[in-house]
Image (cartoon, rainbow, N blue to C red; front, side, top):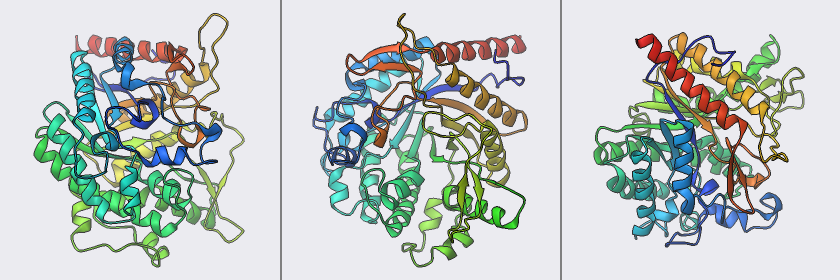
Length: 453
């Protein structure tokens, strides 16, 4: 039992681990898969560290049975994975690639046969390149294309998948991919970022309707990357700066989903850039969902920007940092969960990603000792447990990630996995944190069983 954890999780709490298709699958040219924006971005010199790509990644496409066996050893209740749109619709629309759907069919059956529930993310950033060439997410036509894809997937898997996540982190797709160009497709336009955000949210609302029709009895949600922006001081200027960051990171997505409106202060600030919002769009976006997925890794300290900007992030001196340079702020997750429950009242919440990158190495004895990751997970889980004790309807937790994997523009440099992947051989080596998480889950179950008895 965790030393930091004074409050047990409920007996029916879901313990999982999370991944994404482009980061683990590999096999980018097999069985009729089409090109994605990430394939193109990785092939563009200077975009991804060391020229890395997801062409092979962890080769999960061929090794998924081995990886499901690791999940069984961990004692997972659930596995969150994403489906690659270009595997299913290689041209983005139209022709459905049966071989691509066959893979996910096999994966779902393998999971269910192992007693592990599939939590399926429909879009984790791998837009088909053909869709990007036709205008991409800044174009409203992409909403219809996404709906075709959701229709194909849910018709095939809807009888066995009980949890659907429409989109992963629309903020990242919008701003990091379309506003600042650090991720695929590499656009640098604030107008494109805001149009992308609106069309992702609109396609989410349309997808909810499709999933309810094709997968009756399942639960549907969306995953947002959210944080708690803390003002650096009590000054009104720092408070205003933190509110701006909150508007950009959190409220721009939460308010339309749960209130059917964009936040007034942000809409006013972005008035010259916001895309067309048609009659009915916000009603579609705010269709009732069953749960909200929360990805949280850190929470920023925010001050007023004396150089004329709206905010600046202040570096804390008294916290640990991960290999990404992200500050370890477990109270940020606790405060975020309380705030979501208080301000937006989602019926249920899941932490769909939480974890940390560290520079893991195999010792001479072959083991990977990662005490820092264990401390990180322990502290964040303690924060989550406190939120549950305070009435937050948190239903599950997914560690990011099951495997070391392709970490987007950082390539293979950053390792988030509970399992070490030796990339030249693709050997899997469970780390210390793997065994820690396994024992933590088992202890939680034992404690719940004792209390039930």
